[in-house]
View 1 (cartoon, rainbow, N blue to C red):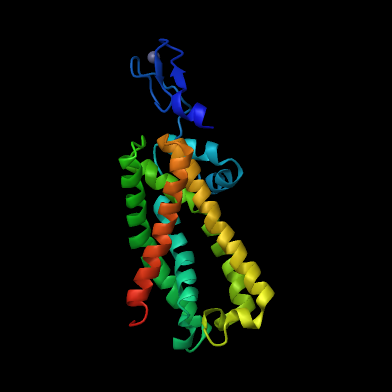
View 2: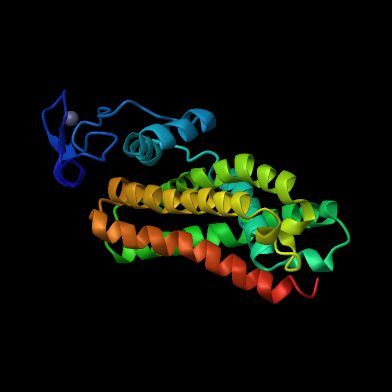
Length: 243
Ligand SMILES: [Zn+2]
């Protein structure tokens, strides 16, 4: 992977000039070197990220408009919110499950609007410090589409969580683990796997999009996803108790 990411040049079919493999147009004659990708198609791209991430991230970097990056962050904020509510055992402070769900949705959107774009910016500044090649919009595209597994976790596993444990998902006493140990462990395992998968995707996206070596990209992936989880947890710790 690293070899073709680093140095492949694109030869212009019109004038023969060798261009950088990430150029869209020939720097001498202005001919298009790549198929033009004006927009990202959301569902097509989400599927592509799962099926062939290298191809998906290449297209994200080439796309003229990085559609959906903000929407993806807002939706993923909701998964982060549910997770931090669970980690913080907020259930004891709420009357019923519906209140917890509404609170998690509202907080999640706030996380998605405020925290995730900041983490995306942090990611971009980090890769730029490591001589990353792509621009801020590409970074935000790579970052937000790397969160696809968290979207899967939100859509598939959070509802299963809620149906299995109800309000006890969020309580310390009784702990959800005590109620159904096997289900609890299985659900924690699949959601953790989704987080690891996001880290891997961010690493692949960083290698492809910014042409940073894979080993460094893995560290960037861990820092990027860790930033989301860490900051959300701190913020819910600071504000969650008093509101
Ligand atoms: Zn040319």
